[in-house]
Each structure stands twice: as structure tokens, then as C-alpha cells.
Amino acid sequence: MDHPPESCRDVVALLSDYVDFELPLADCGEVEKHLADCPACHEFVERLRDMIALCRASAPGTLPAPLS
Image 1: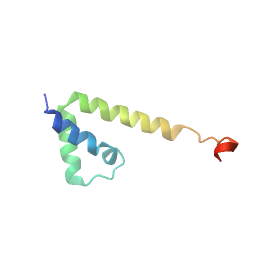
Image 2: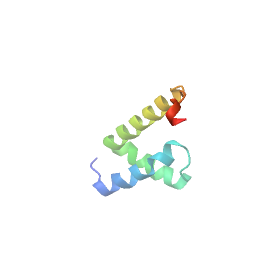
Image 3: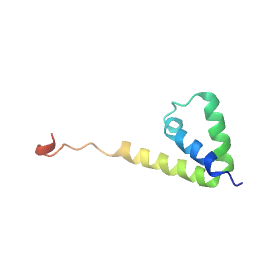
Image 4: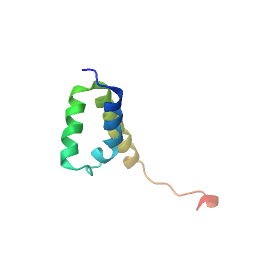
């Protein structure tokens, strides 16, 4: 189903809180409904989750002397 661009922009603006489980339940339902009907936004949230997982899996390194 095609969604108006502003609808997708509204959902993308909420995705960070959504994937961090910080979005109010009422908003989660709206986001999930949109994601179920919008392949582009669904793909975007999956890539966002992948990126977050990669960042969390990275071992923090020590900073070089000039930056520490």
C-alpha cells in the first residue's frame, strides 16, 4: 500500500523511540500498523535495528592519547 510521504516521515521520526521501547503504547500501535502496510518503512526499521545491534556488539576501544 502506498502511503503519503508525510505519513512515512511521521513514522520515521518515531522509530528511534520505538526500537528503544520508549514510545508510548498508543503511538506504538500506530507505528506497527504503518510498518505492517509499508514495505519501505518496514525495511528502514529493520536496517535501524541491525545498525543498533552492530553498534552494541562492537567492543569499545580505548581512545588515542590526543582524544582521551
